[in-house]
Image 1 (cartoon, rainbow, N blue to C red):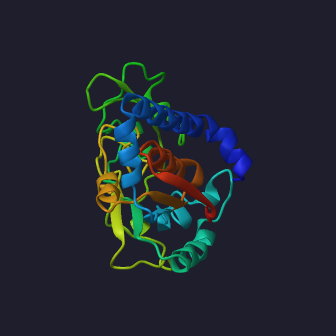
Image 2 (image 1 turned 120 degrees about the horizontal axis):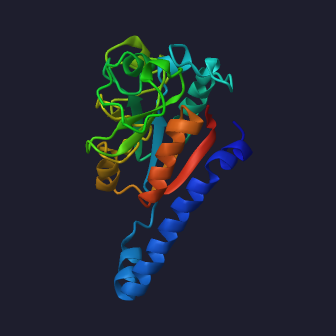
Length: 251
């Protein structure tokens, strides 16, 4: 996906995230200028940088949800050497590995929902019988509050916890100091972002961990560019981090 395509698909969301952050900063400054200045001066003089490596897992590269089989026909394996060089070229303060880690009956699996076994009940507004929903189509399920509709894309079963497909690509450099985030662990809700589930009912430990470590700048790379990388980058920007998507290290 080119930068132009990415901005065409997600420009409005990114613009909204940036606009919201700017509005909050202006409101904060206007409400208490002294506190605003004090807070800005308390920021670290040296940026604290985190590299977020998103979902470089076997199922997205050569398995059940391989990017090669998607319309773009991209090869997820090509980002592995780029990410390895990236992590070695910079002295990162934090390196995060995010991993899809789904239960076998996860709500995002086409097989689960169309068999009538969805852990989140079908919502009354779902437009057609679930058995007739095609792979990669949407279903309208019921959110954890038991009332609200929750739109869910249906994918092939992928990245089931404990299976080879959920493991990182074998050539991806990993170190004991990496902070690992498992997402999509709740059978009833999906999580594209490494920070939150798709409807922000729950959050992973990532945001608290980055704040605990004083991170100021986040660099996002990995798979897939238009889904999990994008959702993660938007959430990072909305959380107040200076956020960069490393285009060449994404597929």
